[in-house]
Length: 170
Image 1 (cartoon, helix red, strand yellow):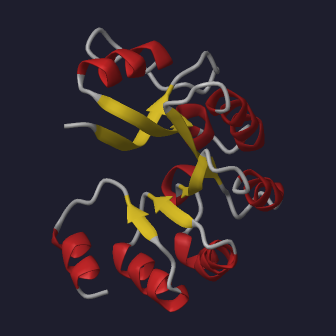
Image 2 (cartoon, one colour):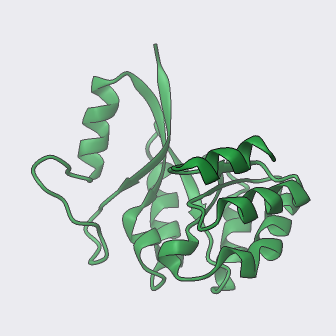
Image 3 (cartoon, helix red, strand yellow):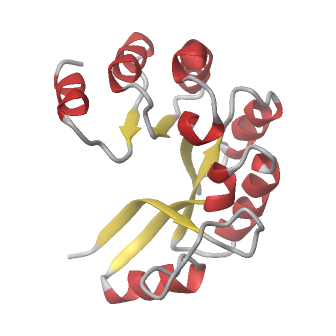
């Protein structure tokens, strides 16, 4: 059965890349080999550097956009940080391309409280009819905000009962 990986990250030589080891080599060649080995038809990606630091989000979004336009199996999550106004304009522009699937936010690694920006982020996403992929810092607040704006939300890396119950009740 063919599948699609909706949430991938990779390294590409940035000084902000994640650590790797003999088991996990997070570069694009690694993703290609895993894709081929597992009959995966496509991957939605953002670079590790775009979520591990606030310093180069715009540059990383541009880098990734250029990459996905050349690779038919890659699709982009456009990373948005509400504390960097330029990312709103950039994300809006990127979302005009069908290779950009939606908005990626990572409040935990970008060092902001989601609840401080939930209205701004989700009203923006709603205005663009965009999916939002996020690593929630508070799943209850996340689900309530998504419901308020009727935003299409993907929570990454769900964990305990709080996460499951919040989604079940939304």
